[in-house]
Image (cartoon, rainbow, N blue to C red; front, side, top):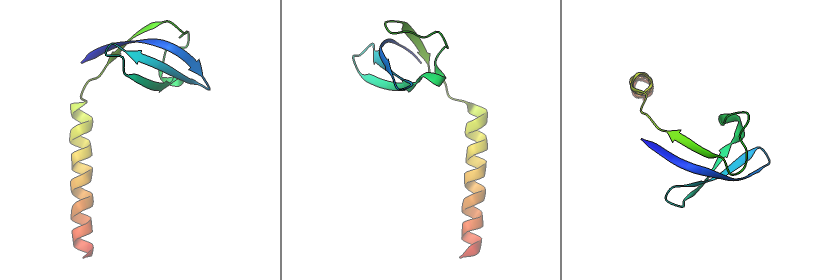
Length: 71
């Protein structure tokens, strides 16, 4: 999924970004390009990390099993 937004303002190391659907989100500037500036249009890509999802599910399952063993 890709969305676009415009950097409305940058204050206290946080960029206020207005998305295509007029929703507003705050993004710490440490996650943005170092040369980001107000009025820049950014492209935001959201993907599912299958490997991390599987790893997280395994950890959760292990924690649940350990919790049951303690009961």
